[in-house]
Length: 228
View 1 (tube, one colour):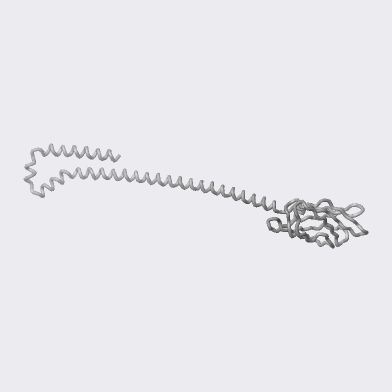
View 2 (view 1 turned 90 degrees about the horizontal axis):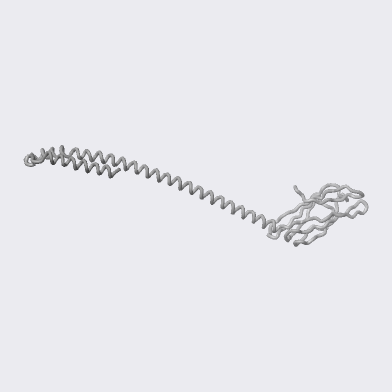
């Protein structure tokens, strides 16, 4: 567009100058004899239209440049918005990747914690009875990892128990346990809590519930993992 305006201005200017040359051809001597102020007025009148022409063309040129600059700014703003949107997408992708990695780390830590814990399992419960007094027994096997500083506590307390503290309990090792109730025989449920230090050095507990089971001629006990 600017080339068209420039070309138009040059063409009109050239044509106008040719017209002036034709009009004043042969009258150069008259112009020379004019007073200086008259010559100034003559030149202002002769070339004033050209000045106005180029002023108008310059105005249009500024409008064109202003529109072009505005369009360029709009394109830059659009590119900036696109860049911001892309950055948001990258941040979202990165966040999801970080969340996935954290989840994997969490799962791996939980797996390691689980692998470091012991897993105590009761195998059968028997009883020996003398008169009204019963002595109950069972075997506990560790199917998990090695544990240390194992302690046994009962709620309500037992009259006696063969296991109160075990310093170390390896994987696959069995311990025999005997216990006696304060009431001589099992009458109410009791909770056994086994506390320990696992292979990673963290403390933990495992609970079991002793449930009286009425049978003839004596009350027996069923051991279940305590669910809380």
